[in-house]
Length: 295
Length: 291
Image (tube, rainbow over all chains, first blue to last red; front, side, top):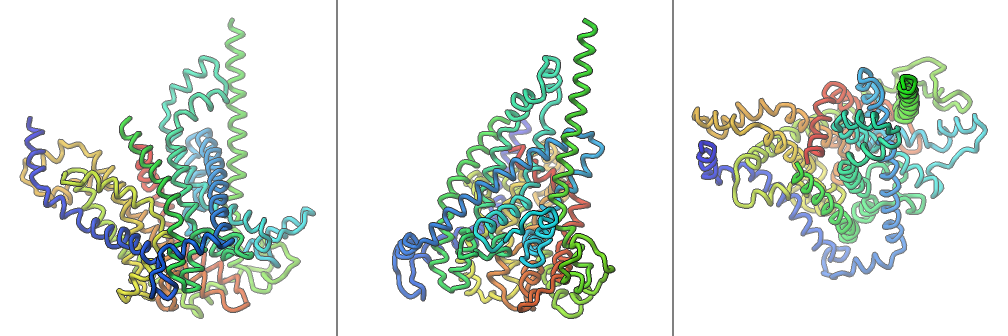
């Protein structure tokens, strides 16, 4: 009874509530929604931004081989990198959860370091590791009688390298999410399974994975967005080369829009990310809602 | 019968031992994989130029003595300190702006209802999923009109778009978990909304506030695309872009100072995480595990 009267009092203050949200609303409208709409308009202008060309820029992109290369690369890059991030994150989280709890914090701390360093800066370190003449990785390979690898100058290896660095940067995020999920699984489930004679693999398949299904899917979807839209790593390591074979949407848009000065075309390139991001966002939102309902 | 139970017990012990061996083995492999690049950066930053250039010596060790020359060079011959100062100014402003916007909005959205507040909460979650790489080109034009191009204040304007959505989302979660009885008690005592927010909600949700602050700090400190696209004078650059672009001069890569610059620029976040990691992880994972 008292509860409802207080809430009635609260409900009479929608104006205060609105004003408290106003800075946020203004920010979202002016710096996210408006730029997005403006971006659509911008992408329909010619290079000098003097003439409206409709979908001309998009048609132009469709005819460019480089653009299709970028599409393929971005998708391939995101899927492969996220798969390995998820796998490494899962194994690492599971390992940390297995060892005595006394040492867990220490190991977790060490494994989170790649995630804590700003990616542009750690990639600089990787760049130095890949450097053609002084590469410390190649020094090691040569020592164990393997051929030196042209890390950034050959298409296959350049792609390999950017995916490797992306996995290195992103795997700890999965580790954190998985570790939190593992800790939230009730221990008596495992005890009951042990009494019933379940072995290690059965516990993994019938308890751990089903209990973590939601968190795994949300983390993977979220990571696909971040990886797909990645910029820093490719920019620092290869700048899209050799011959555009490592460009992603973001780096290609930067090259076209900012460096070559064709802003409308650059806007068109980055807008192509939107449908894919939109679909992923929709799935995430549905997942999050579903979970909120369950709780 | 007894034997049987003993057998099961023994095999469980053996299982446990094997699980531990497997766990430690994989952890050691991952630690090597995750830590060798920073280790190599550190080693390089402490080597003499002569040793860096030597092909014959082992690059993974320092064999000819440690030097701080690269660090001294960084402070005396390059605008590194300017980058540091700019980064600190930008980050402090971004953190303050982010916290004000998101705490106000989170309080309103978690406790007061108004027309459209449900849609707004969902909308905030969606804006959190908008990557910076989607909007940097229209923003390039917009900040140009505002006359903010090539000034680090542009970052103070645009970084909150990346930090506010998540921080608001996080704070909504923390505020919603505060029992409603507490605000009833405060309201009966005659507290207004501001008092309630400052005296009740913020102190109670302090762990969430710390997590949100660290998130805003990280976004601002590590940002790379926006400063790269919007700033081109050395005097206005921040650490990430300054280190990547200006420390590489011509064909001569000064690897030692490049690595020392990268390490110093990365030090503040690493130190903050070392102390506040638990708050941050709790905040980050609560958003996901609570839904």
